[in-house]
Image 1: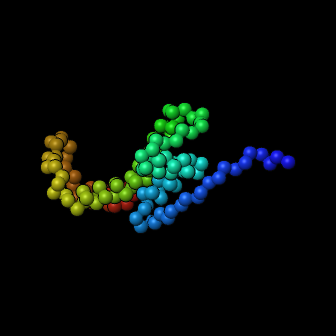
Image 2: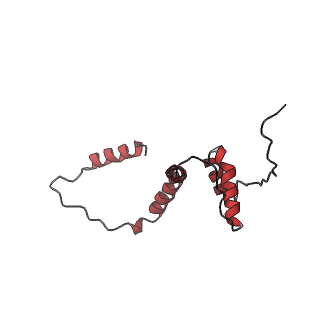
Image 3: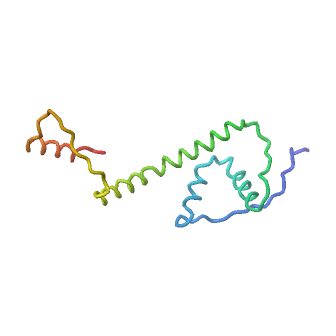
Length: 129
């Protein structure tokens, strides 16, 4: 009555990640595929105690691993982009004196009259960025 290959003995090691101080860890954890999380933690712990990462039996090409890391980085960067842009725009709005002195180019077109200027201002208010 063979039940197949015997299970390897193991010890489950876990820890809590708090939303307040560990959000970067949580984001990193959630960005990984579920099958690669344990290996990533093992590699980090090995590095932390001065050992080389374990050699895994895998048929994944090194280029694909690099592509996977790049894809994770891009996903993270895209997730952070709205907050970054909001801070950038908020900084620009709060410090208008930091803008360079730009002179209006000389043009053959007539200057806007008040009605056209107000029409354009209303149009800009309605525009959704």
